[in-house]
Length: 120
Image 1 (cartoon, rainbow, N blue to C red):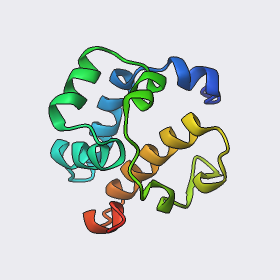
Image 2: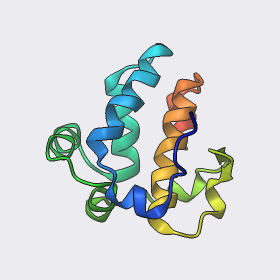
Image 3: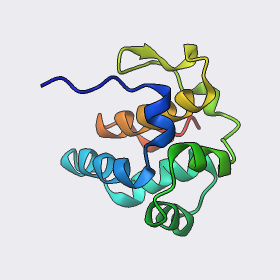
Image 4: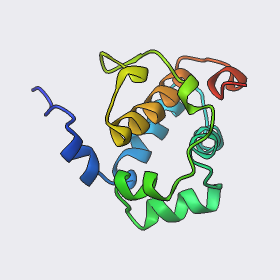
C-alpha cells in the first residue's frame, strides 16, 4: 500500500509527537540513542531537552515547532537527498526545515559521527 505524498499542507498539520517516536525507533534500531536524537534537534532548533519533551507532550505541529525554533546558523550546510529531493533546493521554508531534521536523523541512523552530522 502506498503512502500519501508529504505535502506542505500535511506537514503543516503534522505533530512533532507523531513523528518523534518514529525518529527514535529508527535510530534505536541502528544502535543510536534518545540523547543523540535530542542533540541533533537541539542543534537544529535551539531547544533544550526539556523544551523538546514539552513540545512533544503538547503535540505542537511542525509549523508551530519551527515557528518557535531558532534555526542553527549552519543549517544551510545540510545538503543531500532525502525522500528523493535535494534539501538545499527546497524553496518552501517549513518543508526545508522538516527535511533538514529528516536528513540529520537519517545521517545518524547511517552511523555518521555526531561531529559530522552537526556540521562542526
